[in-house]
View 1 (cartoon, rainbow, N blue to C red):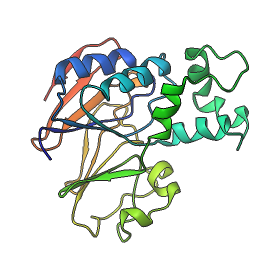
View 2 (tube, rainbow, N blue to C red; view 1 turned 30 degrees about the horizontal axis):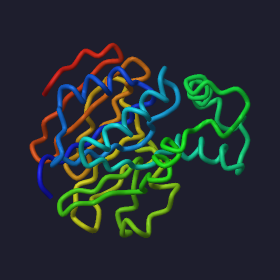
View 3 (cartoon, helix red, strand yellow; view 1 turned 120 degrees about the vertical axis):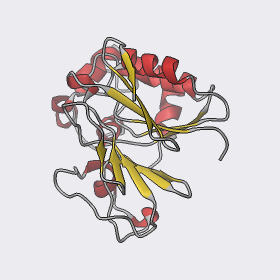
View 4 (cartoon, rainbow, N blue to C red; view 1 turned 120 degrees about the horizontal axis):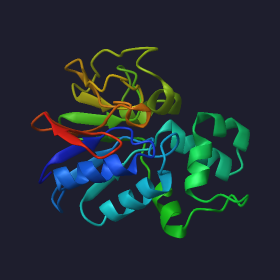
Length: 220
């Protein structure tokens, strides 16, 4: 894999923070950017986040994972559940950002193609990336969707994976904005929508960038 390998934690509609991070990181054609899911809900500009990620895919090698919030939205849009199951979890903010007027077909063809492209996991020779959690004894292609998208680290912190690779995850927010690093597992959901930060990590070097909702960036 050429270029840098970068991961971005849960964005949750924080388009200003996302733009600030991307300006600081300047991902290029040879870089790979893994986004860990939960692009939508709760924050102010879910549509802006999706459109920025679509544009990013034309600038770098984007690997977008699916989070539980994307699953909730898609379950509603595809008729598997009702709006009432999604809106209490930040769905109303997403609907407002897309100008929802009652028609569930509110995604453009390009936006729908983005959601259709979302992956359950991504792995390299040294690391693997999932939205939420993993069973340490199962290969990634045998993990349950409940584990990959829904299981909080507060419910179970897994042992090192049988592959020996380091896990990079989101989903379990740290309200204090800190990185959760156990060596075999690194958590980078740092609660941007709730007053924390949006985190990006360069996997090879351990370098971090963090941006607040108003676009202030710090590098560590």
